[in-house]
Structures are given as C-alpha cells and as structure tokens.
Length: 219
Image (cartoon, rainbow, N blue to C red; front, side, top):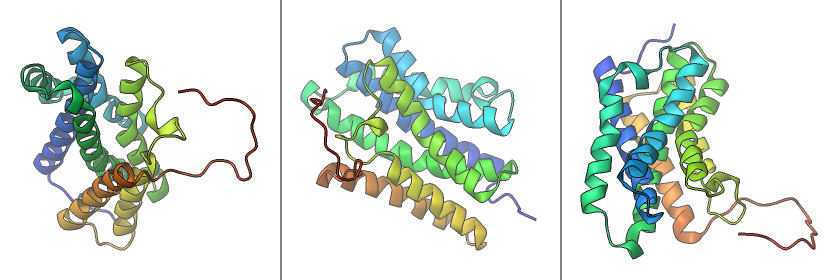
C-alpha cells in the first residue's frame, strides 16, 4: 500500500512555494499589461490557484484547499504587493514572467502528481493531473490577459512538455518506490531547466507532418 511521502507540513510548504512563484508570474504579466492594483491581484490569484483548484475538484478534495486555507489566498496577495512596488523595468518584465512561470511549472507538476496519487488515482492519471495542475493557472492567466495560452501556440517555446517530463519522473519514481524529497526536487529542477532551455534555445513541438497551408499565420 502506498504511504504518504511527505508530512502535511512539507506538502503545505511545497504548495505555498508553488502558489507564490505562480502569483509572481501572474502579477508581472498584469503589470506588463498595465492593469491596476485590483487587476494585478486578480491575475495573481487566478494564476496561483487555478491549477490547484482544478486538481482538487477532480480528485474530490472538497472544499478545495484554496477555500479552506487562508495562506493559499494570502500568499498571492503578498506577491501582488511585492510586484506592485518592486517590479522590474518594463523592458525586463517578460524575462521575469518567464523565469517565475518556469519555476511554478516545475513545482506544480510534482505537487499535483503526488497529491493525485495520494487520493487514489493511478500513475498515468496522476501524471496527467500533475500536468493540468502545472499549466492550468497559466492558461487562465493568459486568457484573462487576452492572450492565446502559450501551450496552444505552435510559435511559442515548449511549455507543457517540461511539465509532462517532471510529472512522468514522479510517476516512475512512485512505480519503483524511489520517490523521496531528493528525487522530487530533481523532478522539479528537471522541469524548470527544460523550460528555461526551451526558452533559451527556442525548442518547439513539431506541427502536422508535411503541412501545406496557404492561410497566413496570425499572432
């Protein structure tokens, strides 16, 4: 029988770290979009909690942690205050958004996979839900900011693939009884580094084979 790998306090800390870095990502994008302080707070909250909220609803962890733990709600507000007063210069905002988003991607794919497995899902389903946890907040963030979600755009660097790799690593470690805080951290770092490398070297997923289209691409 599977035993919980992390104590509640460790799992809670991991969740808060992921929430904070995703909130930073959302708040930075809101500043770049010239949102007011309320808009910054909303985008930070949605980015931080959207994926975890979806995860909890799917696995039946209701009411979701976002509504039962004050820390989950307050942490994005702290990120909002930090970004509101200390955000970088406008020309550097995109770099900040990408780095924090990559960090959140790695943290959430691991946390989502482990929590889904703790609630009885199989390894494949747990990995899929880990992916949804990682990218869900970012998708909502982009939609609210009036942008096509990054993971749906062929002309954007790999976004979902690093999360898939991180979640798959966790699932494999569970399968072979090798999941520890060290291997979990390795999965986080792997997803994070893959995302950074994808941005640095412009790695992109292939489109349909032998694609022939006369339709002009739109931004």
